[in-house]
Amino acid sequence: MKKKILAMMLIAFLSITVIVGCSDDSDSGSGDSHKVYLITMDQMDQHWVSVDEGAKEAADELGNVDYEWLAPDVKDDAKQIESINNAIAGGAEAILLAANGPDAVTQALKEAEKEGIKIVYVDSPADFPAVQTLATDNEAAGKLAGEEMKKALEEKGINAGKIGVVSVNASTDSTIQREKGFRSAFEGTDFEILETQYGDGDAAKSKDIAANYITQDVVGIFGGNEGSTVGTGNAIKEAGGDVIGVGFDKSDTILQMIEEGHILATMSQNPDVMGYEGVKTAVDALEGKEINKEYVDTGVSVINKEALKN
Image (tube, rainbow, N blue to C red; front, side, top):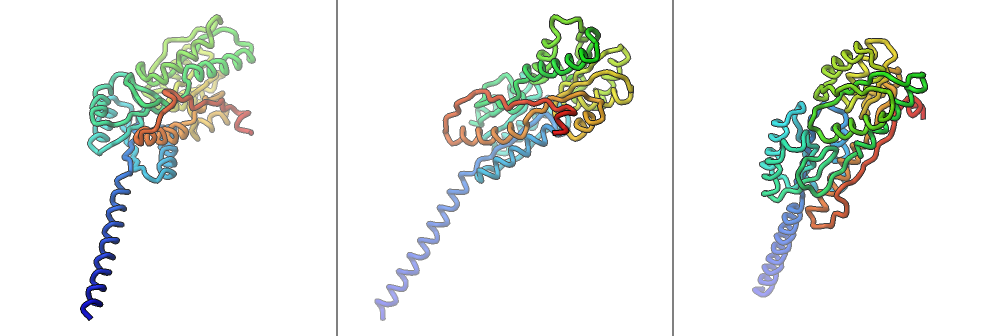
């Protein structure tokens, strides 16, 4: 009888040991989850919403990513620095960053580096080392935008005239490169590209800038991002003239403006790819896998009325 009781006690002890062991394994498994933040320039543009959607998709697929999107309400260096500091305090292991400017966030990124946080740039890099940059070849895309405008002007028999440029600010690398490419498309022609005006990516400010250009009898206006393009389209719509607008980024509003003829074309990026591949790259880096490319061109396509029909 005593032997039977001892045997039963031994079985019970072994069962408890197995359960505790399984519990310990489970706890250690949950520790493999990676804390990844996306920090964009703002939360206003559909472009950033699409980056977030791509990042979420990758996080869901991987299953071991604790993902969060942080961003200022408007484009502001101090607010973006605050977002980076909040991510550091929140235990970030990796940050996907679309830098508002190349230098403003440097000190915050140095602090992140001290904490061992991996930095991956999406859309717009800062002047600080990172695992990888995933972005549009903005200079090439800007030149493509210029070529689209030039072709449309020439088809109307216009071979000279003033052209305005509405952009975000004088420090954001992505829009600076777009403007550079756009201007290069008109080199050697009789078109005059006026001094760039900045509207902080705000559609209302950009509309006022574009409206002022229209009073100067411009033949075309280039919008360097989503807000700039929407503002340009609204100004052209109100003026009711023949000014040709070409923009950047894709949103329902911009697509409607193309359909209605207020914007000729927009350069459509692939922000969802930036977010999706950015999260994958961040996790690979955290898990010690080799990252083969420092820069990944996520591509661009022209959307005009013809493209909308297809």
